[in-house]
Amino acid sequence: MNILIAGDSETALHLARLLANEKHNVSLICPNKELLKVIEVHADLMTFVGDSTSLQMLQEVNPKHIDLLVSVHHDGRMNLLTAIMGKKLGVRKCIAKLHEVESLTTEYKEFCKSLGIDFLVSPEKIAVKEIVNLLNNTAATEIFDFSDNQLSLMLVKLEKDAPVLGKSLTDIAREDSNLDFRAVAIHRRSRTIIPKGDDEFQEGDMAYVVTKPDGIEKLLSLGGKTRFEIFNVMIVGGGAVGKMTAAALEKRFNITLFELDHERCQELSDYLSDTLIINGDARDVTLLEDEKISAMDAFVAVTNNSETNILTCMLARKFGVKKTIALVENLDFIDISQNIGIDTIINKKLATASYIIRFTMSAEVISTKCLTGIDAEVFEFIAKPHSPVTKKPIRKLRFPDKAVIGGIIRNGKGYIARGDIQIEAGDKVVVFALPQAFHLVDKMFRD
Image (cartoon, rainbow, N blue to C red; front, side):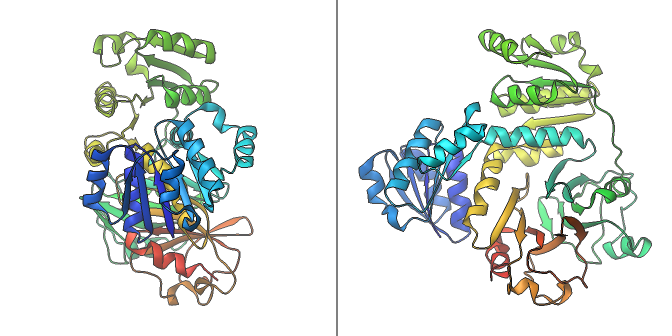
């Protein structure tokens, strides 16, 4: 696919690198020459220094041959204008990144569509959705739902008392042949494994598991995890993510929100009706104690500074908070953050990539999720008539080694993938894949 990315952000670089490595023909327009030097070293793509809202610049990249334009500047208005101009010049499909809250409404989306912008993506909206979902599933480190919760992908970190330690997948299946979940990956010491029958679980493993709703309790039990109730939540950072998270939660939980900027606090008090807003620095231990941090059940740090988010989550852990969630924008910090006890890392670059990558597939993809901390993706495909994946039972398919089918949703009901099941046209199929397998998996679902 011919893809044009426009942007002056790290998100633009991340997308360009990711899609170029997947063998797409990628061009990148960026006004910052230094940023382009960084990406040119690590990816095979065409780069252009300039303004993506310049007619001359857009014409230079031959827009009539562009299948997908993704505009991810810091300034949302530039993204709108870039996408509108690109569509008028012949680009087939255009996506614009927006931060503004009004971009979330159906009316606003329809208006943008009438201007030629096919899709809008809000990293903040995606991040908020993930946070809310995690607070509803307190024992999971990461969770992503498919087709009205008929199947879920859960990440569970195996602690020293997990009953599955030292057992292989075969052992676990032998002990209980009716399990409603399937392990699709193990992340161990910075390496991702697609598990086979004889692979054993070890302490500290990050296990990615596809589960039916009925299998969640058993899964958590085997992983040594227990759910707990949340009543009190502390949020650090009153930006877009903090504001929308508080708005989504304040009717259900007792919310305390820290924000440094006094003027921003006044704006938040006008918007939030049931949230206690503190104008102060959450790195101040005395202030945290005054606001009863030890009574909190969950702590969510979503400032614009990754280091602040990591540090305050570590402080929350020290005070006994059970669930910590940090917004970490520096990808290099993610692995470190997970290893020092922070429960969940949210990254807006990965959230944006998750949304966009589905549009690069030839097969029909309903949803995607770029997993935090590992170079992998989960897809929800619709199996097409006559596609290779429908020809034989799962165990006889020549499915790529670096991918695994986790589950199937048929007629609104979820099933865990087993070797004797044959996928049918119209089935929704959940697939875990490493980047080397993306293209091969895509081919399996085309008709």
